[in-house]
Image (cartoon, rainbow over all chains, first blue to last red; front, top):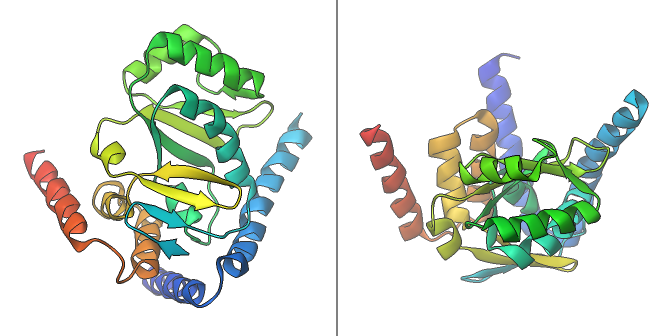
Length: 52
Length: 190
C-alpha cells in the first residue's frame, strides 16, 4: 500500500467511526475508546516501572 | 451527546486520561481561568487515538498564585518535568513557554500548561459536562481551523476531519469563517 492509499484509508476510517458514533449512545463508543486510551497509558506505566 | 450553544453534555465513560485531567483541574481552576485545547479535545469527542499530553491554556497568573498552585499540585502527587525550581517555572510561564506536569514517577501522559495569548480562547469557551466532571474547552470551530491552518500535521488534519464529521450540521459557520479569515490574514502578514 502506498502513502496516498494509506492516507485515504485512514480518512475513510475516521469518517466511518464518526458516523458510527452518531448512531450509538456515548457509553457504547466511549467504552471502545477507553480500551485504546487506557491500554496506551498502562503500557507506558509498565515500561517506566521496568526501567526503574 | 447533547450540543447546546455554550455547553455540550457527553455521557461517556471515564478514561485514564480523563481522570488525570479532572484531577489536575481540581487544583488549577482555583487559581486561574483555563481552557483545554488541541488533541485532547478531539479525543474527548471520540477520536480513536491516544496521546502523550493534554494541552491547557491559562489566563495570566501572578507569582503568588502560581506558587500556591504548585504547592497544592505537588502535594497531590505531581511534579514539573521542566524544572524543580519554582522561580524557573514561573520564568518559563511568563515568557509563554509550556510547563509540563506529570504524576510522580511518570513522564507520559503529561499535562502541558501555558499562558494563552489569544483571549478569544477564553471568550468563546464551551463547558463540557460529563458524568464524572466538567471542563472548559476552547470552541470546536477554532480547534478545527487551528488544526487545519496552523498545526497542519497529518494527525491534526485527521483530528479536524473527525470533529467536522461528528459535528456536521451543528458547527457555527460564521465562527468557522471568522477563524479561517483570521489565520489566512496572519499567514499573509508573515
